[in-house]
Image (cartoon, rainbow, N blue to C red; front, side):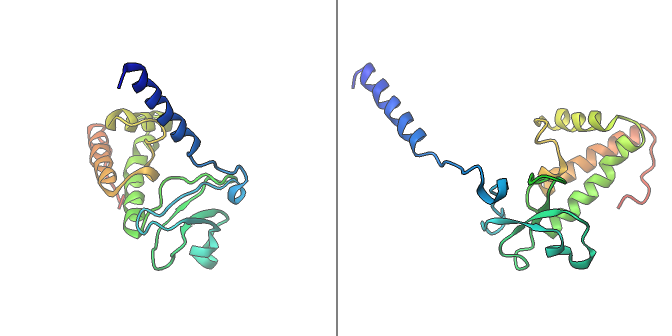
Length: 165
């Protein structure tokens, strides 16, 4: 095959790839995100928080695995939007994220950094983009790493770890 033949073949593959890419409907599920459960592969459904929390629910929405409660994964939504706060999480990961927040938040609550500086520190420390540098995006492993690194910052600034959790 000649060089021009290779180019035409590559261009044809690009055109096929572009033409077969999925097209998303702007009005799909009231502009909700299309999210799959990382545990069972099912589609997550945007629901009122009361679906999971019952009478204890605050106003708000969650993306909930369509196999809930057998698959106990869900994630909160930013108020007034359909934007997930992170990735779906099962009970274990939700608890780990809460623990990570309790330790990490002490950095900005004790004025070591501002809140935005603290999130920038996460991005820099773990070589993440600004979008990736949110605990709602983290795995159990990343939460553990954040807890360790946050504790170092707190210790270096003589902040006692009290009832964090």
